[in-house]
Length: 460
Ligand code: URP
Ligand code: ZN
Ligand code: ZN
Image: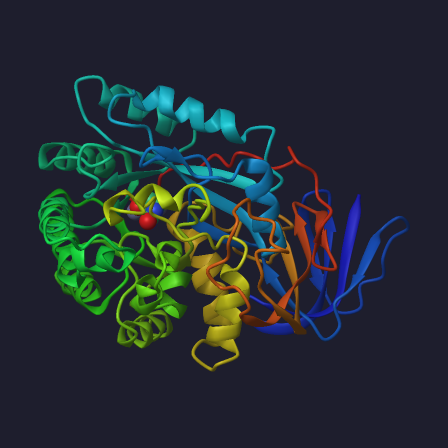
């Protein structure tokens, strides 16, 4: 089977040029002007459109038992939403509870995905405890194709690790060449502040950000950086939300700590006033770290532009507004944390980043695809348009105009944090390893075609 994408403007992290892309089977095999299609080739005209490498979301929750409930998507709904939004690979957080063994957790997460996903996928392996049995299991998981770990400095008693566990995880990661992704918030400060707020009768969703102000996140980053410095492990700070935390990462980088930074589309376009909306509406916008003062948005956009921030993810974690968020109706600490956005990351990043002049097209591709592939051992199979790369391609129509709504979204959740927001441009055709999975913006792919991507560690 062959596919020819003609006349589009190819945009990668380093180039922009007009050419045709010929794909045989699952792979890009030729890029040239005026390629004549052999008989039987499907031809897609991309004139007037951009052709991007498939986007990669480095931080997604599909299956997540969390705060007494489960995040709502399945691989079927989540991968469809990802593809319609231009994301052809997702990296999910595998998060076993502290009561579970790492290997059993890995197998459970694999079971949710294998045979059920329409897009390719892999996992960051959550290290939620480190006892006498853990090291052997983590070595086995790495041998099965995982090259990144995830640790939480927050969520005491659930996923959070103590300092001994943190140190041992980073030591092992350094030995194995694995990069360690980390949720950075000081859990003691969060726990104490939550108690104080509740005792003062402050129970509404708008208190969530009061319980974990920027310094709480900055302290988490500072703490991780100290451990990274002393172990030499490569680290990646997930969902960084504010200037204070970014400053800690930059200071560590300047003294030689190996650290990459991820921000989220939510932090780039939403601010904490959304979580202060009355009548519990604010619960739709409760996540951790919380949405911040608007001034942080420009800091993060500039960080992306200047290379201080490496990637944009979603931390997609959907909980229904009608039935799940109200678990915290009278106590903000019980609101399931998460703002769904898997489907909207690319359209929002394009609309608010490229169209508003904050990011050029190559940086847009870099932070949402190429840089992710490089950090997580997927490049150049993913994140590139070149002969030999997987034919994961996004034909993007910059002239499309639309409006975001929960009524039309593919994500399995009953609200959109961006309801009524205009978008300028969207993926019109998306391919996964040479097969069309989205046409005219609609999902036409195959559930079960998505592959588990085996990765080999490189961060020695
Ligand atoms: O609020 C969030 N971020 N929910 C998902 C879990 C996590 O911390 O990544
Ligand atoms: Zn987190
Ligand atoms: Zn997360």
